[in-house]
Amino acid sequence: MEPLQNILSIVLSGISAIGVLFVVYHHFRNPDIRADKKLGINEATCDLKHKHIEEKFGVISEDLHDIKKNHLNHIEKDISGINEKMAGLSGQLNTMIELFKEQSKK
Image (cartoon, rainbow, N blue to C red; front, side, top):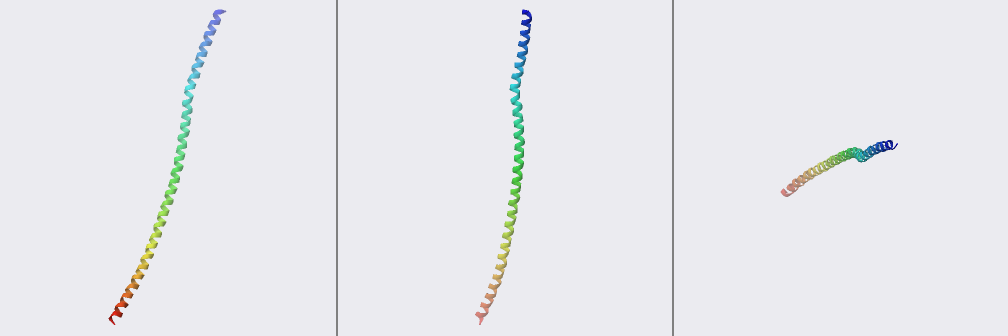
């Protein structure tokens, strides 16, 4: 009976050693798997954030372009209005100079 107990204890010790090896293997392997999953989630989140930021900057860029265009149109209208007024003043000044010349001759 004693030899059977010795063989049985050796077999059980071997099975226990194999079980310990599996536990240690999974202990060191699972953090890598979890880290890979977290890294994949972080990369996907970063991609979504970058796309969102690019969309927002695109909208802001379009808005700034529209503002610039409207501002330039407004300035062009102001300048054309000033040119028209200057032309009118120039005409009035020429008329006044002609009148002054005529009065100077008399």
